[in-house]
Length: 109
Image (cartoon, rainbow, N blue to C red; front, side):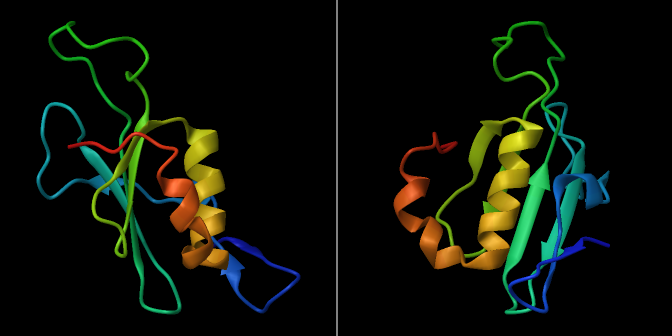
């Protein structure tokens, strides 16, 4: 699973590699979750895609995902598959490099 990063010996897990399973705290909003454990012991959780059960959610969040890394205060959401893929790669390469970038994203409260 994943692709080998030529700069290191680590395998990089991409969005297409994620194995979504039923979320243990499934709600009407998100029912699926994928977990990636990094070699350093970090945990990346991706949930989604966002559903619109009652028809009252803005279309800009439907079908999007949340991502949470164990070192963050809260998840980043509502992001596309491409944005999840980019964050997955960055987290696995060096999660500390992401700290300045996190503020650019909208956190779910």
